[in-house]
Image 1: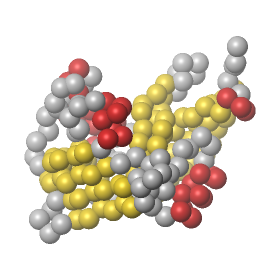
Image 2: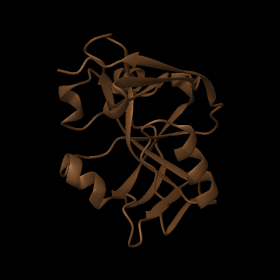
Image 3: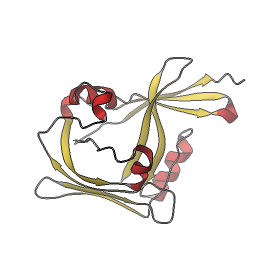
Image 4: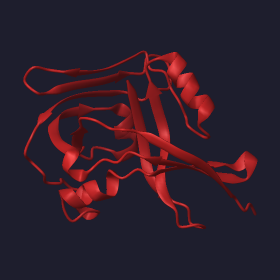
Length: 178
């Protein structure tokens, strides 16, 4: 299981938009090591335990147990819903649920800075997720790691049943340092 924690960023010099992964957790050490060795600036953690369990009633239980390490924590029990509304403070940034999906789902670029190499790394990827493939889910979500970042903001959750990940290329942009 893999859990990616990201924010959406823009390189002010090039205008390129992408995601910055500030936490990643993979529950199998060989995969976590390979991912860390093959990707620039990707903070990788191996949690003590992690699982996604699909229940017969269509609900899902998701958990990431950090153990004594620095992996993020997560415990969620969600179920399919037809609800497509946004709670505050999401409504401050998005007109509606579809606008939120249109912004958050496309992740065609990961950006990270390697100041020690004076560069920004762009990992050009393709997930090819149509917005119609995003199935809304609702339920209880608990995470001390998330709460530390966003306070008590209500989560907005959705599920994508299948993703075909394609890594296209890695590009380096020179970082002008003062």
